[in-house]
Length: 90
Image (cartoon, rainbow, N blue to C red; front, side, top):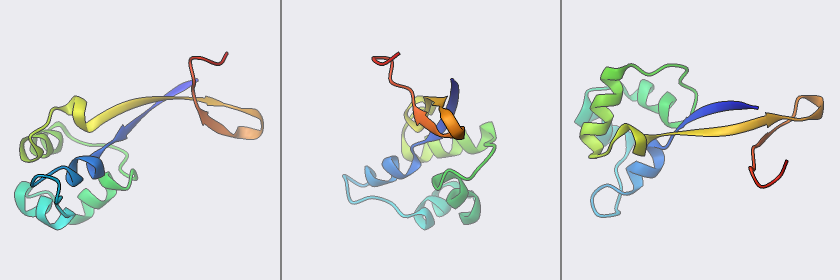
């Protein structure tokens, strides 16, 4: 079993402006973080995120790191297949 940190940026963007949502372009203007970097984070392709970027995202979105990040448990199956861990199944 292994843990994967996922970023819930797209979910948080949808909740901005009373549900009408923000675009990555709007977030870029609010944070000063490059569009390419935001796109990598939102698509799950970013390998690292600095505390500075995390702080800017949380400040602009009015959230905490716990709202933005989650840890998901995965297990390796036969043939290298991966599936999300379900604690109800052993």
